[in-house]
Each structure stands twice: as structure tokens, then as C-alpha cells.
Image (tube, rainbow, N blue to C red):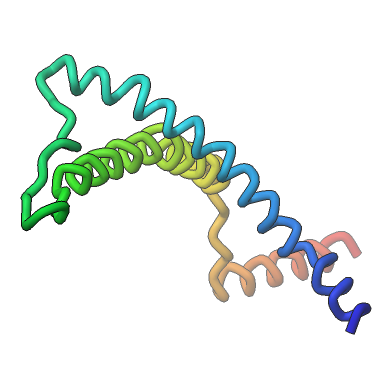
Length: 131
């Protein structure tokens, strides 16, 4: 069972997944900083507000804090926009350029059967003339 576990751990996709998770965790702090330190102050300056204090009082100490939920939705939209415009869109553009670079070279279409036959006849006639 130990050998099987070692084989599992040493497979490439497990290592790739671990690297992806580590890079993702590091990238999360970058995206959080972009949203919290750049986008949120801009929205606040334009006229946005912090909704965390919005809540509905049910009774005694029971509240529905819908303002926190609104803040989470706004943060999600900002993070999704940041990831899309700074990661997904540039990668899609890069992949499109690579794809176009591979297909920009026009391939010669395969000759038709008649063209192949005529080429063979021509080559045969040439070989008979030189003999």
C-alpha cells in the first residue's frame, strides 16, 4: 500500500495540482489587494458605500445582515472582473494570436486525381524522350 501511495504522489498531475493550488493562493492575495486597495476606493469616491451596517432586526440579538451579503456580491463581481480583464482576456488574446500564427501559412491543397494522372503521364513521356 505504501508503494501504491508513493506512485500516486509521484504522478505528474498531483504535483501540477499542488503547484496550481499554491500559485492560486498567492494570486488570491494579489487579486484581493487589487479589489480592496484599488477598485473599492474608486467606487467609494464615486459614491458607493459600505453596506455592512444594513440589517433587519428580528428580535433581541437576532439580525439578518443583508448588507454583508451585498458587500460579498460586490466584491465577487469586482474580483471576477479583475480576473477576467487581467488574466482571462489577455490569455485568450495570446492564444488567439498563437492560433492565427499557426494557421496563417496557407497550405497547398492536395492535387486532384486528374492532376496526379497528368503529372505521371508527363513524367513518363519525358523519360521516353530521353531514352
